[in-house]
Length: 437
Image (cartoon, rainbow, N blue to C red; front, side, top):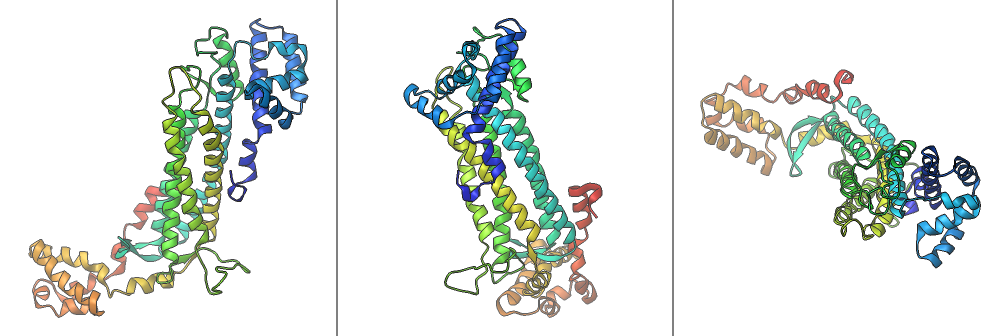
């Protein structure tokens, strides 16, 4: 976890103090459940709750105990016993360390996901607002980085909105996938702990009981979760890359907001660089990189080993903290994005109307030319525009083969820009429904 790319609420979820508090709650809820079914005295469960709730868990003291025990959960239980007193003998009855560790990780991941879902809503709101603002702002679409046909900047942002709406649904599914608790004992058979304890603790912690655990919650759940974070990171990179391309000097159709007093270069005072979206590209690479070790964690030895443990201690905090920061940063980029419609029109006009080539091609085939003949007619005139800056419509009118098939007024009508945007309302209705206008 790097403070530079972190937000306080997300960091707090992964603080040692938070982790130990969750461990205590799991143990205390388990004690309450045991008391309800008569496994331990009710008075002892009440004492565990009262004294544990009032305790300040000393991270340094727990770490000092762990240096001796070489076991983090035992170190915590030893420290907790110092606060609880004799009734501490009823803590962790029939449980194993993974019952605490895995259930805690589920709690932390669900809490982290809730923060990311909230930020996703803010991002979607920003994308929707800007998409509606520029619904009819004409711009050239590009394939392979080359001018293709016109679209609108609003359609670009509507596409991003639809993608992140899908990502929100994916993240909600990932949250459900990861939100399970396991308190099934040393090998997952409930030999020394009643299954009712697991049900009780799961409900109290906002989780579902794991269907079948071994000594651990199956790691396919975690693999799916971190893979989902990787997909969302890729969507962040996609939009960030679009902004970076649009901010290039030769394009300059949109750019990141450049604040008063901001400096773009230590050497060149004129520079206004897309640093936020470049940063987002890098952060996306990091989040994606956490998906692979999560997948490799699925295959553990028999009922359990701890090869996954060191991985999750890193990727749990790092992936969620980084993605949360990236979502917030992208939201700010979208909200403050500076858009230049005049530059969009200028760029669209640079190729002398070539964006209408397909429409002319189709008209020629409708007029009786074979597709091969029509393609040759259009391309030879298009290349004059491409290579020598000729006006495309003028060149077509001067081509006898073209004019033998098309009337001049019909050809001129094919250069109507509105032709390319006539279905924008349909696209927006699909994306935004009743809020499309």
